[in-house]
Image (cartoon, rainbow, N blue to C red):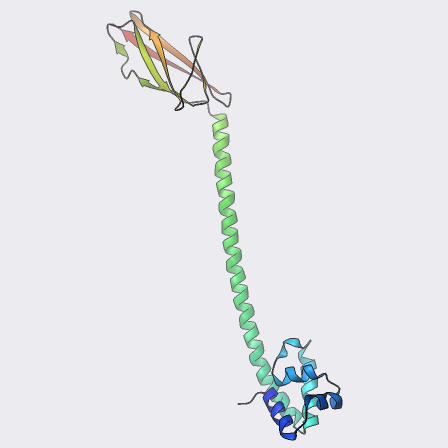
Length: 206
């Protein structure tokens, strides 16, 4: 089935009239007449303007304006339906895009919140101290025991007034002199956040 534009062009060509001649007769620019014949409605400001041109163009060619407008409405409704579907698809796409963006933003906020919470915890938490050696607290036949421990790499360690340094892994050693009976080992560790931990450990020399 021919479209309204095709019917107008077919009738014009049958009568041997050019678009330039139609332009002069009905005072509608040639390019708009061509758009009508090509059923290209994108360049018109409104549907009313298209109807006016088709009506005048049909009269100039001796066609029934009412019939041509009926064909136009049929074609234009299909065109509007396609535009509507495209708008719906674009809207769906935009909605999905917004959901993805919101998800990414929420993820970034969550990561930063977790990182901030972790940093606050580090700032407020005193350094941990772990004694690695010796693993027993009852000792025999020794004048001193080497104590090996681990804490934060940036920590400052003081044992009985002496500053002790840690290696790159946060490990430290200290030769603790012993006497018969109970011996109390005391270590003070100050973290980079200024928080202090004190560990006391008893060793029994038999």
